[in-house]
Image (cartoon, rainbow, N blue to C red; front, side, top):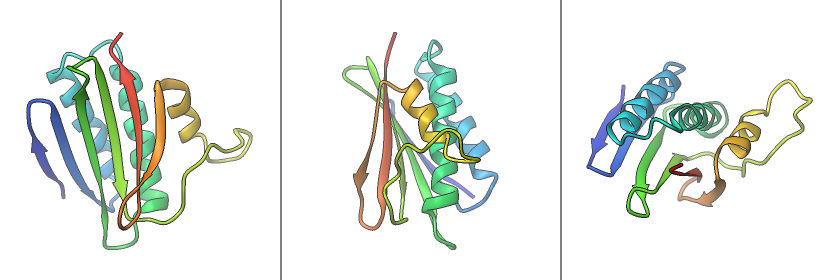
Length: 133
């Protein structure tokens, strides 16, 4: 199902368009965070990974494609960046929390120090960053 790449400060996981990929992405994130001793913000990071992976799966991955989860330490290990690359169109944005869906980015906005959307050919990269406490 998945292909992984690991370096000391970089981890990548490619997931196919399958429901179980979100659970795999969460476990992948937990493993990376434990290896990097990022325990203090592990719950926040893992929840954001879950939300971004779910958004990619539901909105950004056409049939037969997948998404890439990339995590790495930056700024000499004082910050962590999470990226989810997908090939879907559109630009994710915050939605009204009163609706039945659309709360994922609200959670990312509340938990991460920064987040955004960047271009990718084809598709987009949705990212978030965390400072080490």
